[in-house]
Length: 136
Image (cartoon, rainbow, N blue to C red; front, side, top):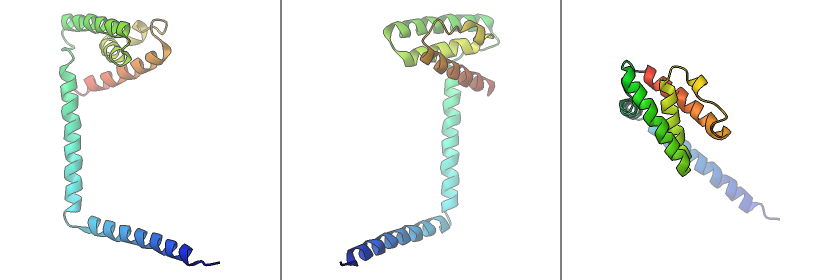
């Protein structure tokens, strides 16, 4: 039995791994590599921050009770329309927004009203919106 093909395969794999290691070593030891990584991470962080700012603009001023009440009613209506159309994502979005701004979100949101799989996603959305509004 000829073991040459197995030996060639093993040598080829080892050579490929060695080349990858050498190229990665050269890339990371490059003087500008760390700066590029820092810049890309900073850009990514700034993009997320700007996205959160844009999301916060959607919500009313929480100090104005009239705005909050109107927002709550509108969001619940949008959620009802979305639910009637079968659009679960919009339903979760609007219900989460509405209940997150209300002071007693746990009491308002009843498990019997919406399907269980939507309920859990709405609860997650409420937590996300509350964190988003706390960042102001």
